[in-house]
Image 1 (cartoon, rainbow, N blue to C red):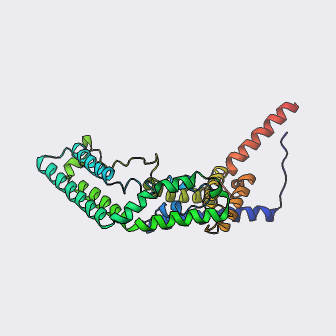
Image 2 (image 1 turned 30 degrees about the vertical axis):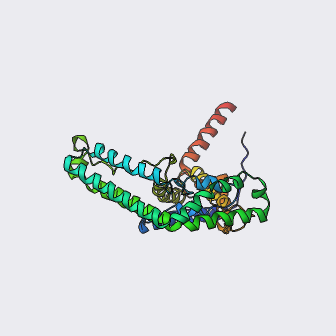
Image 3 (image 1 turned 60 degrees about the vertical axis):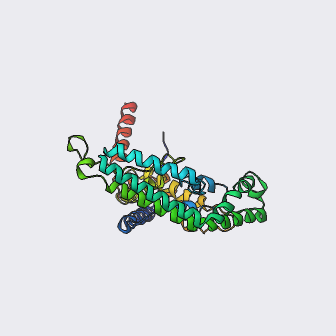
Length: 309
């Protein structure tokens, strides 16, 4: 027979207030991201510190800039995108010529970028092997002074090519936008007029199964969904555990004890509070989880009474 521990009325109301407060926080975080419309997870992922940092960095396509600063490879991406757009939208001859001209102009812009930052890009590529050796050296991870030296070298190396990467990112974004603008409304229609085709994306080699663009759309929905579920007390254990996992992922991105990490005390405290909501099944108190819980209790009592007879 299950053992239940009784808690006082004050404790119950405190748990309810905790659940609603955390739910409201999550909901408002999600709502603000939607209203601002420019939420990006790249800043959070790129700022990760500690032994788990590479896992967060891998979520960002070409985090180390190796692909974008390879002139031959980025040019192939542009050429392949032109052919993909022509086949995707079924461009006519005139549109095909416009797409080819657009691809040529974008490639020439790339040439200008590589010419302007030629020396910085060369030094950046030359330092790649040195950085990889440092990453494979366990002493660089656990000895604070060596770890700081490695991080400084990495930071200086990335800062030297930031202007070039920013320029290339802008060229890629403009190229993609202008290529999709060539398509007419008719070419954008899906078969049987059941909506419109999404923009044709660039094929990015080495991209993760869930790109940051998709993550940026999921996070606000996740925040608001968790918030609503906690406020109304529905599926509270699932929502609380998901919220705790998300908050702990923020804490681990700034691994405690590593130089340069941002404080994550608030996230850690809220994660622990979410575990309290999970362990107490807080949705039973002034929440919709009370309904299935009470039905379960009545069913259990009926079985007990039948067994006694």
